[in-house]
Length: 127
Image (cartoon, rainbow, N blue to C red; front, side, top):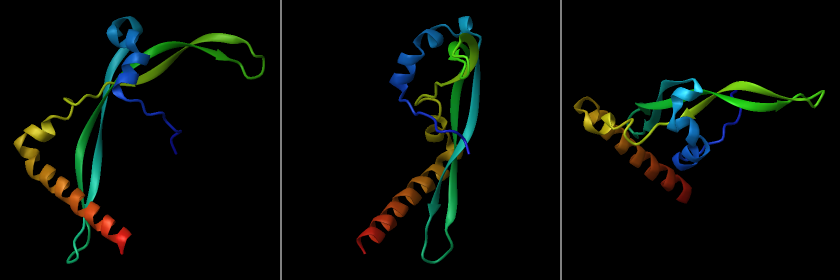
């Protein structure tokens, strides 16, 4: 299992890594991306649940950052270079899901399935 990861909003990320993001060339940075899938269930009383997934792109600046580490045994502090992944995904990153014709039906089905699943969950809580 992956270790817990702090989630920062965009404003916090840019405040924390402002110097690196303003000039990534000075910090030995490279742009990286991954695609994840956001999934939901399409629930129907007449048929088994269907899983609907949409691709979601995430973009990172992967940079070397100098940090100070303390040796657990000796207590000696040393400077070390560590990789840091800074998420720079923005609202525009996944805009193609809303604008490209090829995703139109998938996005509509996903949104409708989310609404139906929410109604079903709310109904289940009140019964």
